[in-house]
Image 1 (cartoon, one colour):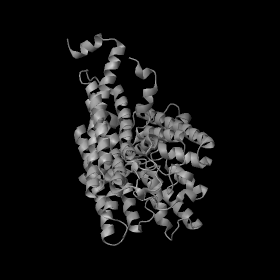
Image 2 (tube, one colour; image 1 turned 135 degrees about the horizontal axis):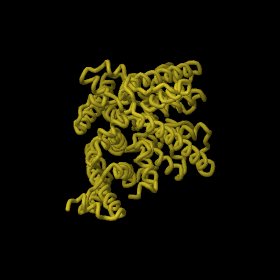
Image 3 (cartoon, one colour; image 1 turned 120 degrees about the vertical axis):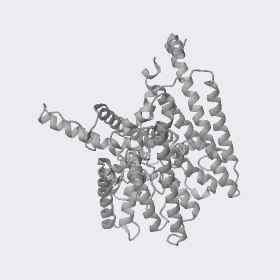
Length: 512
């Protein structure tokens, strides 16, 4: 009797239990391999004469948990399909966030020594949000500061790696998931093999990181920015390409020179692009396909409009804190739209129009297939064109019109999925805003309506800084434990694009 036939003879609850156990085994494998990343900060610690034990301890704990989960499923049929993939992805990211926070607890880092606070910081790191509970970043030693940066770099391609590399092992083609997010000819440009696609994305990801680190180091070596040390160059490159925004400096990039700011602007913009199109343009010379991309065109238009508005606002109100409103306006527009979250100036005190522009940018994100979070521009394009089609059908009900992206028709299933995602996203944003505002009224900082809006939008969109007490030069330290948990959940939901997590809380998911 085959394994499939034997499985069919089992009861539905038994089959479900086997599937769940198999999923846990795969989660254990992923966590076990992830635990090896602790060796990187260990090397930094040894190089600077610092204690490596917090990282060795965190790696050992994560490795032991992963091994235990693997052993639980060792003698079970690993029948993990599409539905169980949601459990694997959601639980892996939750455990990754806990693992990211472990060194802070083991080292007793002030402000992060409680598990709930360490989980927030770890979640912010791996989801590339960039929100932090720390106030004195300079109090961190080199190895702990580099660990914060590394968590964002590891999480930057996380969704892409899980979709392309892990899901094929779950009997689901990673390409199938890619097509649901990136409909269009650019998928074919990367080839038919998912593993090959993953390698190319990683090559591009690593190459951009190395190039930025070199560019920032050159800025420091040439004297254009005396503050840019090799350590800072590597640290900021590790969090720019994943659009994370963690910085070893308490005031982000404010103290660095203009040359540094422009270098970071360029790489933030590149990180917000579709990696598939970027690969084709840089390595295959397909510039025309890149320039004709509907999503890239919207990316450029929205950035230009937002940057122009912020530059005018800074120039007329003299709010930039310097004599260069152009640089600050462009930098903040790119940083907030891509969800990187770096800051060159404290925009928390800007007037309402500028803050509303900043909050609006948090709902765009970059291109699908990038390291950015939020809604992503592809969905904006699809929803807008779907609305346009419905308006035309209202006037000409007998006409047949398809929603198109890059001149190709989009399947109705993709259109429906985009609309559902946007509605879920807005619903979570409203719920998160309400809970944060209500909790702050009892136990927390004083928030205006815009502060509550921006805080929820920033954490759900994996942006980082907000307005008010969570401004770019402040921290989330003043929020209560309830809000800290809610914001951690918003970061988790936003990074995994909601559905893989939400389906776990439905009754039908746990029924056979």
